Length: 66
Image (cartoon, rainbow, N blue to C red; front, side, top):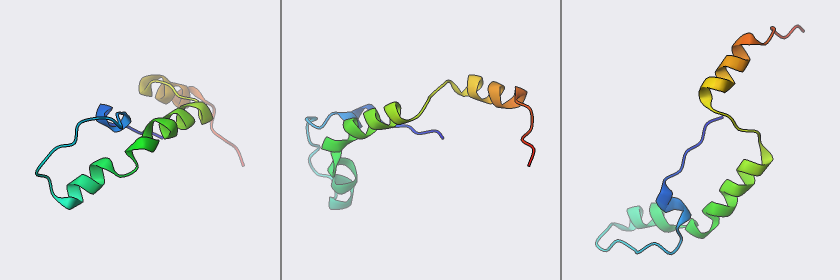
């Protein structure tokens, strides 16, 4: 799997932008205080690697036999 996040998504104390719509404010700020812990959990629960290394390892693996 691949996931990404924006740097501002781990800064719950970031300044709030004035003049944005309710929808945008909701998308950007709701549950922001939980993002860092969620990322830490993902990093701890799964093994990670660079995309080129992961794809290369998959390419050289023998096919699965049922």
